[in-house]
Amino acid sequence: THTHNNQPSFGRSKHDNIFATFLSLSTTKERTENNKMVSLVATKNHIHHVMILVHGIMGNPKELGYVHQALEREFEASVAASVATASPPGESSSTTTTTTTTMSLLVHSASCNEQDSLDGVEAGGLRLATEINELLQDLVAGDEIAGSLLQPQKQPDEGQQRQQEVHHTIALSFLGFSLGGLYSRYALPFIEWNIPLPESISPDTSIQVVPNIFATAATPHLGIKRMTYWKLPQCLEPVVAWYLGQTGRDLFRQGHGRRQSTKKANLETTEEDYEDLIQQMSLDPKFLLPLSKFSKRIAIANAFSTDFAVHTATAAFLADHDEEEELSTHFYVDDARDEAKNGLHFTINEDGGMKKSEYPTAKFTTPTTWSPDEIEASQVCDDREEKYEEGDNGSCQKPLLGKHSSVGSSSSKISTSSSHDSVVGIMAKTLDSLGWTKLFVDVRPHIPALWKRTKSDSILKHDQNGETNKDVSDTDADTHETGSVFSSATLKQRFSGNGFDWNTLPFGHSFLVASTKNSWYTWFYRQGRSFVDHVLAKELVQEMLRFQPPPTV
Image (cartoon, rainbow, N blue to C red; front, side, top):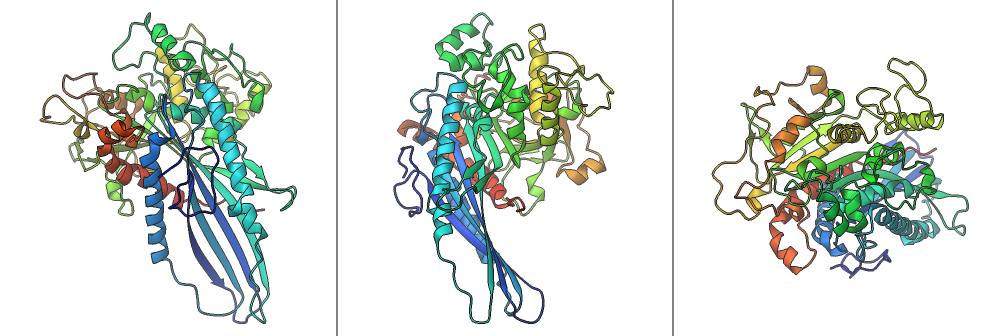
């Protein structure tokens, strides 16, 4: 069970009625260097995983309640498996370096936007950043970190000397559902990535917060302008946007609206640089830089027109505008080839079609073509207000996105005269350039339909010209887990569907998180629990367990 207060509790049993729960594991590694006993050098690495769950529009912290529980169960089970298979410490007594790694999981369901989610992405994102910063400060000041540093150290046995180093690292992850994904993206520049310890414990010392996993489910990354389930006449989009308040104006990309954050986090951009907030979040390096620093970025989307609220193309930022293929290449990942993974996904048949598994999910990756260092360099270029033409070998080769788009002509400026499809294509490819894992989910077997389906869609069987997709080169195959590569436009065509098919009811939006928003949602989306347990939770926890703390100076 979970309460819904804003104050997290630490150091209590996972069975208590608390909002944030800790689970932990420890592993020990020893290395013997010579044959005589001299000293014990002990290094303790404490990795504190913090997973922030962010609900959607008009939602509440209970919305992702089942995901909360599934993550805890999967983490606990994975911990038990890791401990059971860990090698026992060596028996020799000599100069020994012992490294103990403790991993804990804190799952926190954000509550700051429960009362108002219609006042805009900016307002909700700033509230989320404030809540996360307060949570991290409480964590650092609590028993898990500050309290542990006050505990007396165990004395070594006679004849031994002990040198001990203790390192704490917070690995911060997000799972944003629907609008919650945009809130999370907006909050990133305002997160405090170094949290100071209380002066009474260690003055001038801070705990590093490391970005780990950034995941979204059914999030309208490109907005919903011209991406609604039923195509709205453009004259009606402002009406619907008005009904949804500033959030609606943001989603339909109706201009900037109120700007509260220009002076915060050095976001020194003006309304003239970008047409709307969604465009700015997709192109402005000041938003892209913190997003690029996450170890893993995951976007989950419903396929085949099963999501009334969020179209496949905006949830997975797919576009038809594919002038630069290197920024929109998607590599198919066949998890069935990796026995170490337990995800049950689609597999590609020999004819290029898809064979369903119990939890039908097609998985793709986009390569990272724009690194954090390059994004930081682009900010330097912007500060000097320089324009760089194609072929320039200077220190700022990649033009600034937004003012001077790096997609299409190298120095073209995005303006109101640019076509909608062109701008959306630039936004999509810029996000793709950070490197993502994309999961496309077929929820049709689990949501209501007017009659029994006789045959499922064949996905990825042919490209737009009707030809079977070719395998990637041997070089690409060495880097990726796949033998097939697809363009953004091809995936958009194959996964988006054609709107209402007079059979499937488009109720898949909340299936991806098995929503527990209220008692009715809990009953209606109960079949989504299998997907959450066997795909979503496994994907996130496996990535958590692969986390390595940054080297200490």
